[in-house]
Amino acid sequence: MKLSSVGFISMVLSAGIMSAADCLSAPTVRVKDIASIQGVRSNHLYGYGLVIGLDDSGDGSSSEFTIQSISAMLQRMGINVPKADINTSNVAAVIVTAELPPFATPGTRIDVTISSIGDAESLFGGTLLLTPLQAVDGNIYALAQGPVSLGGFSFGSGGGAGGASAVKNVPTTGTIPNGALVEREVPITIVKNQMLKIALREPDFTTAKRLEESINAVFTDNAIARDAAMVTVVVPNSYIIEDRIVDFISQVENLLVTPDAPAKIIINERTGTIVAGSNVRISVVAVSHGNLNVVIKSKPVISQPNSFTEGGETVVESDDELLVNEQVNPLVVVQDGVTIGEVAKALNALGATPRDLIAIFQAMKKAGAIQAELILM
Image (cartoon, one colour):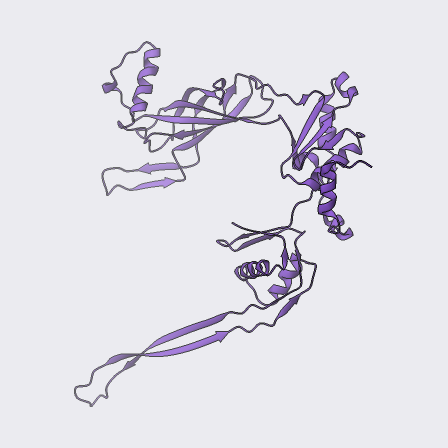
């Protein structure tokens, strides 16, 4: 029997690891939830524009590029105005960004984001002038225009240091829902030489092999896993002749696959967060965790002289109390092959907090007892 390199590696990594219980507990998902069709992708667009109609919250005179932009715009309209006479307080220079989704055709509307690049205080109440949006190839794919919507505000009474002001969120960034009109379609090639390529979002040899087997169970010997991230599928001739590529892709992406992943424990020490996968296994190890708390209490004591004593003074003295509390925990033996959930349950019996668990897991990893990758964020 001929076995591909990916299939051999998958067998080596999986042998003796997955039990029947593991198979039952492993999630089964659709292909479309863990992989994507190569060639189907979005594209980023950007452009430079002007937001007008601001209430004296636009760019100041130090933003020379805003003055140049206004002057050039007016000249295109046949109006010549000296730059010295241009007031930018109601105008703001902005960068407009958008994401062009795959298969977007001319006439499709997409959302845009507007961000100030000058010293404008707020874009509240402004309107974006017609702005061409281009991709990295320099071609214009969309045109943006419309009133800017903000998720915050900025108000102030002005008048010097004593003026009151209020700011919520970021008033120098806004959006225009459906604010851009697609003018050019991005060509997409899905099937090339009768070959369809499926890319896993999380590369894994075992998952790639399972995806291959799932496709071949429906379309015999049409798929092969090339590596941990890519599975190629030969489109059957009947789908090519009848122009049913979409039908074929729909059937493939709705097939069910059981994904696999290396055992990992993710730890965020700043927030005390611990996330562990179900494949994490523990070797035999003994764990004991205790805390030593030292508390010093100081109480003021007022000492007053006797009423008939001459020359006496009232003094304040300190009565110090030292308390030492050492938490005594038993030595817990963690058995071989238990899951991380069982370990957490055993450690919780010791009264361990999330931050205690982080310290314990780090020590267990150094002792070689945790059979998983420990990732610190």
